[in-house]
Amino acid sequence: MLAGIVKETALRERRVAATPDSVKRLLAMGFEVHVEPDAGAAAGYPDTAYVEAGAEIDPEAAGAADLVLSVQMPAIERLKRGALLAGLLAPFGDGDGRAALAEAGVEGFAMELMPRITRAQTMDALSSQSNLAGYAAVIRAADLFGRAFPMMVTAAGTIAPARVLVLGAGVAGLQAIATARRLGAVVSAMDVRPAAREQVESLGASFVEVDHREPSMAEDEGGYAREMGEDYRREQADKLAETLARTNVVVTTAQIPGRPAPRLLSAEMVRAMPPGSVVVDIAVAQGGNCELSRADRIVEEAGVLIVGDSDLPSRVAQDASALYARNLVNFTELLVDKDRGELAPDYDDPIVSATALSPKEASDG
Image 1: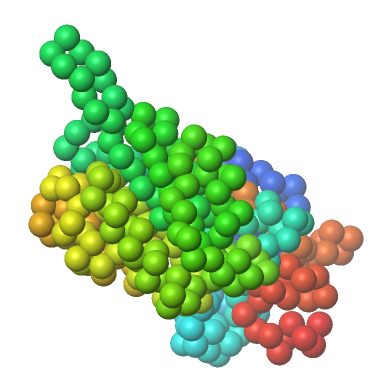
Image 2: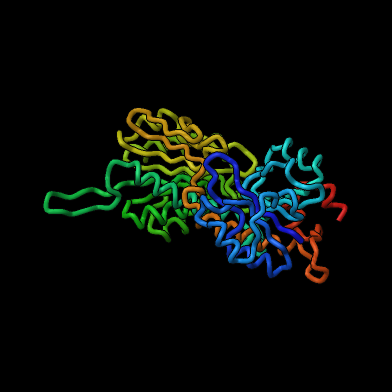
């Protein structure tokens, strides 16, 4: 079995799908591991580190591999027919990608489709990367904000703490709350799920309550927030407008898998924020939670900066790669028949069948 690690080519992508530590685990599974030159350089993993771990540096790693590990979708035409591919393959609504994989005879496994079950937690790449996105968003906001985050009492006077509002208390939102609190900000958060209050308050933030509730509709079976009805959205907007008037930094994290991100901040709301405020929209790749967000741009409106970074995990590429590589290695164990020492995905396994991009082949078992 040959595992190939590709060098990512997407703009601003600095992560890599394997680290020297994960290479050792792949070798222990019986793989020979080939890594494309400089695949990990942008994440702080030089070729020498992979060689020391037991891998071979090979410019043709992708084309020769039985199993290709990637962060984003690689050039499919480079992969050999019959190969398996695991990565963040953008499966939602991407008919072209699925069709291209099928035409090339490559079986894709999309890590975004990982089911939210206990056994799959160590393979949950969305959570591992969202966690770092929440952290990076606050650091980005702190860098752009023209003031200090914590309260400071000095001989020259007292500096008031920054007020941070986090919209969405999922994995990214909770990490954003924790990071902003560590930096000394006064933090509040809003989420459609009533159960999020306890998590928000446990981190030392206040929960912004919307009186109108649709508890049965707020959360789906996978634990993700649902898009709420018109009555809730109207009351949420009123509460947001009231809160934003005294907010300096907003981090928006609301995302619904397979659907455009819900619009939470209108241009009018942004204009009502104090000049010098910062909005970081983590959901920009799905259309954004803020009306003014633009992917990979900073927009200024009425003295407010709206940051649309789509590469937040890549801004902490070494840690993001380390976590993602562990997710992939844990998933790879399900693709290997240990007794025979060969790749043999078990499509009866709910994790394998859920992530496979070829439902017909999965059902054939």
